[in-house]
Length: 244
Image (cartoon, rainbow, N blue to C red; front, side):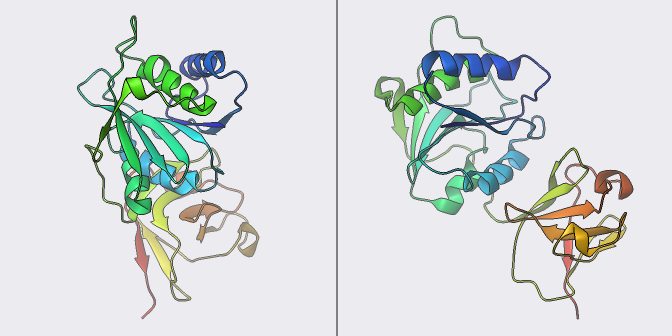
């Protein structure tokens, strides 16, 4: 399986080109869209989303993980292997939260540059062929060189910010589930939210926070948009308020 994790979106031609390249070189391997709306140009938010989502994809899998605002600049492309799963993408921090939390992985720098590769689309021309090789079971040793660690490493602790806004207007944070006492509230901006287990535990239009299906703290409104109702945006800071 090849799992796509990108900021390419679905309206533009980039995702289709990558899928075509993957299919041409690994036609028997299924391709899964894990998330193609990672916040644009934001490997930091992407790193926390990838760390939360990757554990819900069964190994063996190859993750094509590309959020690459520095494409064409002197940053490495890398291959990383952890517990039988492979990750291919830029060395800009995107893989670092996952790597730091799990540890014990192996990392290679991609030194290969095919003739005619676009300087602005390494996803299609460099990362996709490498991912396809790995998905076929062909380790491309001649295109890689091992390196001791990633060049860019983000803090692996929880990120108390909004890292993703879905189409419902729910706001995902970089806070993982914890053993918080009953009555713990969450503050964002001027709003304070109580915790609920499910949407059905609150009234229609009522805001709350809960632990979502991938283990992250999420802000929501029952049958409404937390983004609009609470005037939320990516990067907003979150505070957990424990009861006295």
